[in-house]
Image (cartoon, rainbow, N blue to C red; front, side, top):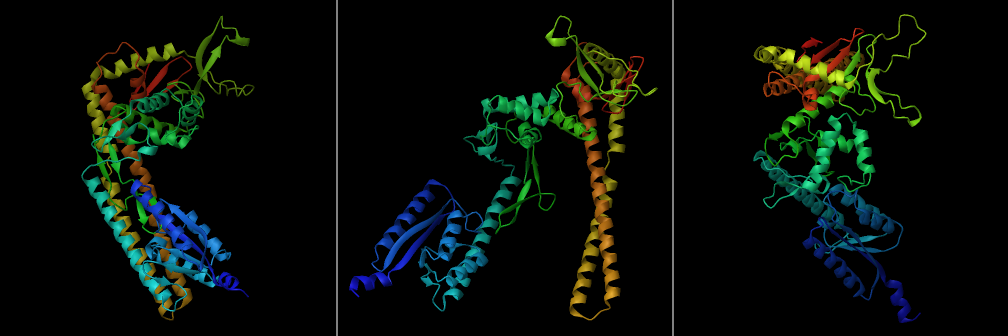
Length: 518
């Protein structure tokens, strides 16, 4: 055998692994330098055969779930495509001890060695695994420390009322020179359009379809809009210039899993934190409308501010818009009216048909003006009644006291159950007796949890009712005692529903609970 053949036999197939954790320009330079360095290092050794350099760009090393280059490297190593992997350090490989050791052991079993250059650790060395365990643990603690420092910094900013937005996927704002959100007028016009369309009666899905049909890109730059995106825009308080901070938080620094904050950590609400795109009154009106539609079971589609607000006194069905006189496109006699949607659905059933007649939008507007002016005859007394209703019907102090008691009960039962499980695991106890006792703890826990959910529903309802009354008071305080022209915003702000009777009477029920018959 020639010397050349012998050299070929002992040459090791070598691959490199390079990673940077952000996509900043400085880190990209580091990333390119790493790739170039390992390419030259491997090619510069006569006993090494260059295979490739695996890379991950802008990916954290805390875990390996989203590191495609890393996963490809492991797969190729297990498939025997290289004998040695060269990487910069344990911290560049993984900051998670479990991931690091698991990967090293898998590669080791497949006959693939890893060399951590900075620490000069070879995994085939007898001391290699011990050193990797120590270094990985140190790297993991470093990651924990960094995560805690970053979290502390973010929460300190929140305490100080400093607002930041995910600008790349947040329509309407960009980062200003002072670091605060700055309105982008071209995008703000889209936000205002969404709010206006919703208050005109459009649904989330109808708005999403319209925006897509008009070729308006979504906040993520996509051609189609998702219903959830429209809903999110309509309910995001940042569009009225306020900011609720820490809606979500990182539950685990290793997995980077973000969860909804339902009271686990403190939230901060900052008013007038940045310029508003939507006036606060208009934003609050939209929230009331969202809640109203949710409570009544909103029809799948509608095109008017009167939709799902007019009710038939006979059957309780909703009134819908109908078009008369447009047969086969003939518009000579075209008339739009509102009539009970179920009026002719029960024909042939004596005594069960709707006796209510149709009405026009002009009728609705004229009767509304009359009803509102009647309501405003004694505005001061009306406002006083609303304030009284707010204090009596919307008070949540008793619910809060019950909450505290129930949470104490849950804590006590949880501790009793924990002790029972510990006792059963450490000592010999009668299993039947223990099972019955533990079932009792679980039942107490279930009952307390169900009661908490009931109270949460009651509290939401009371707070929602309080907000409705506050909006109602705000609207009537700034209106003249007598109005002469129909105002869409006023209609949407103060009317709950209108019930139409057989004698063409209309009973207007306002958001404060008052009813006026016209």
